[in-house]
Amino acid sequence: MTVPSYPEVAVGFLLLFFVPGYALTKATFPEWRVRGPDGLLRLLETVTLSFVLSIVLTVLVGYGLLAAAPGGFQAYWTDPLLEAALAAVAAVGFAVAWLRGGFARSAPPAPPSEAPFGETGAWQLSREFERLAREERRIRHQLRVHGSDPAEASRLREELARVDGERSELQRRREAEYAT
Image (tube, rainbow, N blue to C red; front, side, top):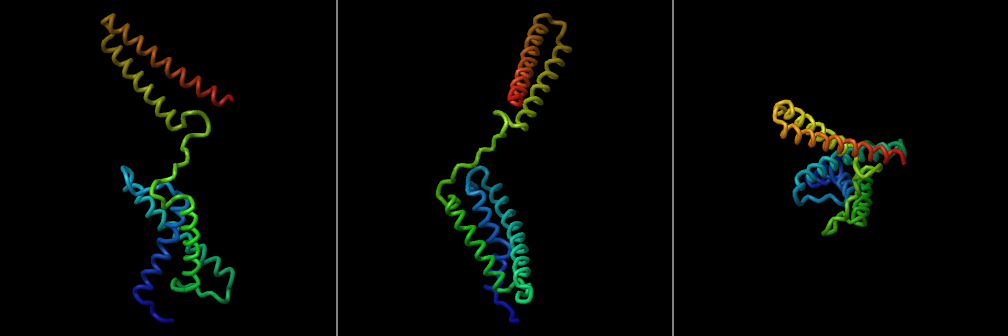
């Protein structure tokens, strides 16, 4: 076995640790761009996902080669058969990413992230209920503190009734969505 040169090592590391995962990431998430306000976050997500997926693909391809040819494949990282298989996986990933618009100038539309039931997802619903509960606590506290003034107490009771009605309406609509 010969010692690989520096360019071979660099290409090998890219094939083992980045390129196949990057191709699969671009094929899976063609709408991700490394520009704009979320650019740094998308870059971090893309690099991390590319690294992890490349390692997973390397292990899976290596296992597949070992299972397909138990006597004919040596499990070396620099084996040309492993590198060729990973290059083929990367080429297919890049082709799919190209077809899905992953390398287009403008990003394709992202899939909708709405919850399947109703117009509001569970996370947004719980945040809205928390906001209404905080508002109710704030009003009740002001009512205890400023309860001696009849005009202020009346205004606070009306505001409390509005918050309670809003919470009841939100709960009623959500229950009606689940009933259908």
